[in-house]
Structures are given as C-alpha cells and as structure tokens.
Length: 270
Picture (cartoon, rainbow, N blue to C red):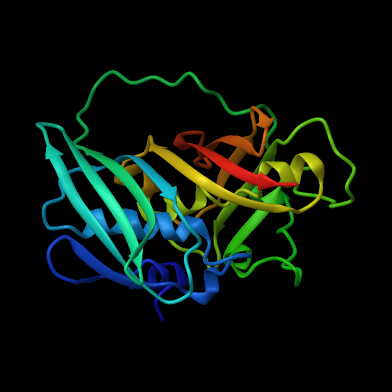
C-alpha cells in the first residue's frame, strides 16, 4: 500500500497548471489537516509540472484559512525561468475559495566552493538511544505519522502551565512508518514542530501558522543518502508579541549535514 504521506500529497492533472488532490485523515490536525502536508502537496504540484526544471531551494506557504477535509485544487504556475533558477506561483483553492497561497524557487545546482558555518550542538545522542514520543490519545492524528525522539530537557511538556525560560525543541524524527526522504517529506517535517508557545508556556492554546518558509540546503542526492533514517530537528522562537510569535528551525542529517532551515510566523490567541 502507498505510504500515508504519498496519499496525502497525491495529485492528478486537472488541466492547464492545475492539479486535483484531497486531504488524508491520517494527517488530521486540531483544525483541518496538518499544515506540513498542505505545503508538501503544493510543492508536489510544481515537482510534477511538465515545465519544471531543477530542484527546490525555497518554498513559502501562506495559510489564508483553515482547510476543510475533502477535495482541493492546486495551481502551480511557472512565473519566470532563468538560466539557473525558476520561480513559481502557487495557489490552493477549495470550493472555489483560496485557502493557501505560496511561491517556490527551483534551481539547477552546480559544483562550487562549499562550506558550512552552522554547527550541531555537542553531545547529541543518537536516535537509537532515545525513546519514541508516546502516541497518547489527545494528540492530533498527524503526530502518529512521525517517530519523534526528544532529547532530555528539550521535549514538549509536561503541560503543567509552569512557564519555562526557553522554547527550544530538539528531537530526532522520521516518517512513521519509515519512508525514504524526498523534498515533499522534508517540507512536511519542517512543520512537524509543536508550537513554540506550547513549549514556552507549557500549555496548549489556540494558534495557527500564518506563513511558513523553508530553504532546502540538500539536493536529491543528499536526500537519497539519508534514506529513511531519523533526521535531527531543532527549533526555537525569537519573540512572542501582541498575538504573534515566530519560529526558526533547522533539520540536519544524521551524519551532520544541514538539510533545511525554516522560519514561520504564527498567530496565537489568549
């Protein structure tokens, strides 16, 4: 049987630049579907497009309204193609109304001088030494689609209402059941973090991602080398203010290569 993620991002040509898809209950969230699969489906529309060149280096998704369960349509239109980059305009509609907009940049990478400045924190234990997050009943369905293994002191709880001094999360994660990594699965994992305000204040609340941008540092060769093994996900907020907070995050391969960095702005209600 196809993996649940592949079913959630499955698209069929619908004429012109349009593709037809549908939500998958396996990735249900508190309200509507998990935003990671919404973004992955929109990216998949560009990946499947006959005019696509290169591989994604950037993806921005703006969540305009909650997506309802059921059918939707994605339009992926190449706005401009240059010698090495291609720029895309994305739009997801449902029942004739816009639910999400976005953009993507694809590129043809070439061998150049390369170096990294960001470094992994020292003494990160391997995923095999950590226990998976229990799939307790109150969590939304999408959480069960991931094997999450939090580092000690950087987990999502307990939700006791006792505010802590930081909103940092660090955990190993992979699709559940395991699935070889590709660009859609990496895009979805970049939205797999619990909301920073839940972590900081140690209590749930009403929130909604407004905009999410992901930068892909990996190419398809690096993703193929990663296979279906766990990747390290790290996130923190920089500021909580007047109903909105941000999140900046990184996703690393298990051999120390940054696969993606991601940033989002989130609405919250007291």
